[in-house]
Structures are given as C-alpha cells and as structure tokens.
Amino acid sequence: MSDNYAYSGDQLMRTKIHGGYDGFTQEGSPRVDWDVTTAYSYDANGRLIKEDLNVTSLSKTFAAKPIGAWRDEVNKLYPSMRAKRPVENVSRVGDLCGTNGQMLVGNAIDLRPFYTLSPNTAMQIPFGVAKATVTFTYPESYRPK
Image (cartoon, rainbow, N blue to C red; front, side, top):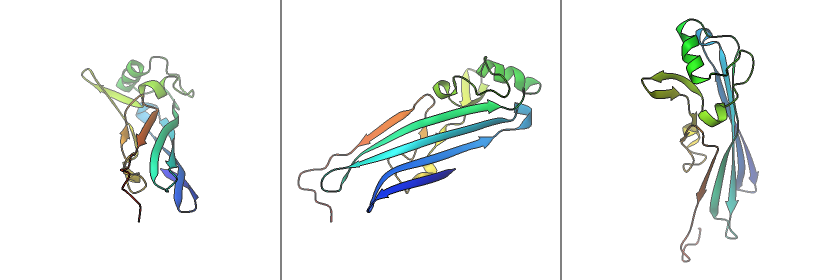
C-alpha cells in the first residue's frame, strides 16, 4: 500500500491511498488494485467537521484461467470472468476469493494500517461500499487550544 497526503498549512486536506496484491498461479494469477481518497473539511475555527471517503477504483484481472478445482470456484464467484480482462462487477460484489458453505470469502479493502492518519475511517470497507462520511459536531463552549 502507498499513500499521498495534501496539506493546507497544518491542516490535512486530502489523502490518496493505493493498494493491491498478486494472487497465486493456481488461482489464475489474479491482480487486484484499488484506490481510496479521503477529503477533509474544516469549520471557521479550524476544527475538523467532515471526512469523506471514496473508493475511486477497484479492479481484479486474472492473467490466466485458474487450474483444476480453482476454476470451478472462480466460475461460481465471477461467471463472466475472462483471462486478461478486468472482472466486470468486482466493484459491486467485492474482491471475492472463495466460498465456505453459503458464505462468500474475500479480501476487503483494509484501511486499518492508516489508523494514525484517521482513526475514524480506519476500517475494512465492506464489499459493495464505495462511499463513507464521518461528521463531527462540537458544543458551542468548545474552543480548540
């Protein structure tokens, strides 16, 4: 994973986080890439009032057809999967890897390593979720030091 930060003075204004991985050859050597951006808004007193998180891209591409039983598993998860083409509905259904009975197993976008950047959005983003907003309110008597 990698990240880029944009500041205005001392205030963090936005981030761009990129991540991904390469899968095993038996699975068809899938390559997954994702990008997440976060924008920060402040009030007139310089207090953080809103964080907007957006999954701007999520793609999964298999370099080859999976081998053996993996082929059946991948065909269950992504019926329209074709080697060397991005999977069409991965942003809607998520990065799925297998099944366990009726349960789907996959890799969620994990922002927990960026906890120090923003504890509010340090989470695993659920499958199919592309946007999240955190808003803050302050009592009138609160003044930053």
